[in-house]
Length: 208
Image (cartoon, rainbow, N blue to C red; front, side, top):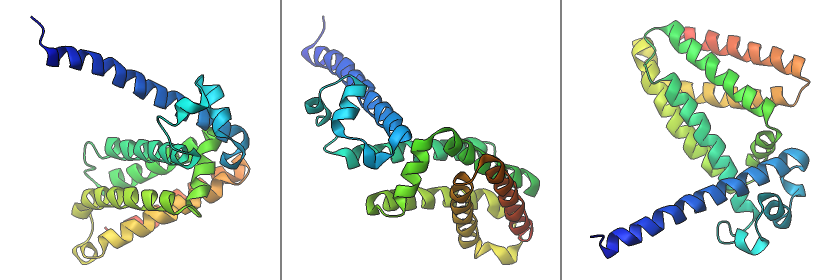
């Protein structure tokens, strides 16, 4: 015999699944509009129309356009963290393997920005939006901590006390340089990316 609690759970799960699906539809619609005309040029009404829902229904999930953009930024930052976790899932065993992990993260971030104009728009918004900047900073701290832990066994003892600062500077240099590269024609941007990789390798191998 099914209990009342079980029946309630059975009802809730499909509703939660539908809610998650609806949120993803909204975010995908907003991402498409940002890619087409930038975040400043889209409206709640347009997002709702593209997502196939009413503007009134939008407010069940997001109170305003800024909340949608923040959710998209969160999704991007989580994707980067997942890539980082995958790169470090089997900890690099040598300085060269660590350098290859740096290369792969730079390449993946560049390719993401190249393929999705909405990501570039959100990155630019981080420079002037306090909430986005705080979100990026918090996620960066976690990613720098993971990279520092992986790198620590490989660096010289004299470098270990300042390693977190060094990794943080490398991380933020790469992030800024990738954004600059994405603002250039692809051939020039590609040259910049290869230069970024080479420069970070020089910094990294100076510590090991």
